[in-house]
Image 1: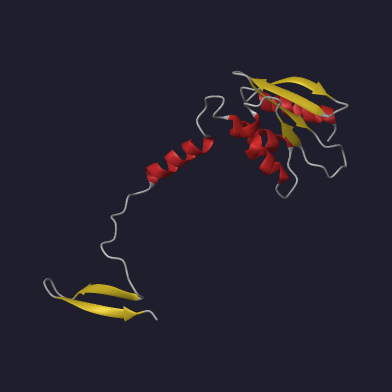
Image 2 (image 1 turned 120 degrees about the horizontal axis):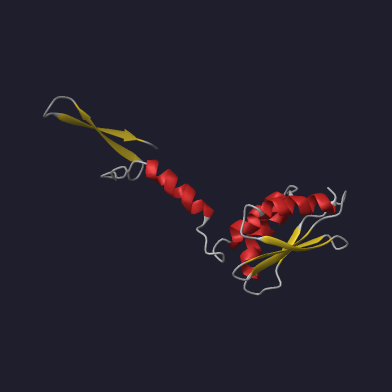
Length: 148
């Protein structure tokens, strides 16, 4: 993908995030992004036909530790698109931007649908499971199953 197409992808991504694309440098294939309150990073884009990956970095020491998630993602197997890289950077910076973690919302929705189960009274020990089986209203028999 040529650099102008990548810049267009970045502009579109910015329209859905607090970030602005504040500078592009075609010869270095670099894009600089900024969001209040002082969150900044840049992306170096690979050349056409080159096997290199994207590279993300920040010149702000406050921002740099938050990029670790995105850097790990980029270095993992498989080629990544600019949009995928930018989404991972956005997720990394959510705490700095004062936004809730995207995974927290998904967890809350999921956990709201989960019914709580009562804890089991006894746990099997030494490979023996006790099964209690109702034979009549007041009569119960106890069976042992050995699991050796």
